[in-house]
Length: 194
Image 1: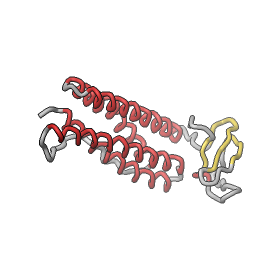
Image 2: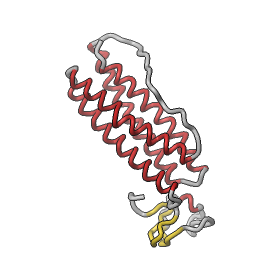
Image 3: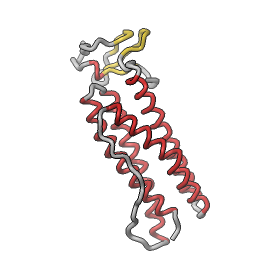
Image 4: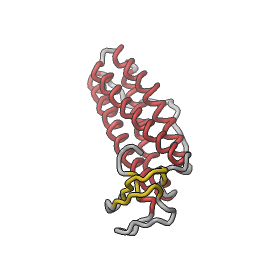
């Protein structure tokens, strides 16, 4: 049996567990006062669903030419379930492993075994995983530098719930949205550049 289907299944399993962990992490981030990070975990969980779906679909194509039912997967997956900082660290590590090691190996194997479309899609998914790692790393740095709700210069903050905007250098700890009453945890800097 070729190695590509086994590696596709391992990738599917990895994406499935990442999706679930990010869903759990979203709840922790919200509880820790980081509604934006919660939403990013939720968004990324949905992206992991898409990746897992594609790995599973590609695996089904192999079942048409080779007969197999079950695979034993022996991979290393994270078990972290801590506070937002611990969860972000775990997410960065997992995403880096995927885009730097797991998916290049899968793509190279698929290419060698004569499946260029599998290799192409896997490399595209790896690029998305790289973005996930970079994004989580930026969020981790903001929290670590205690700069998540203060920037040292005036910026526009936007309420994630109602869209209210305010310009300040720092949102006070007790800040509440004048429009909808949500606390500062629901505000983000207005732009994608955290």
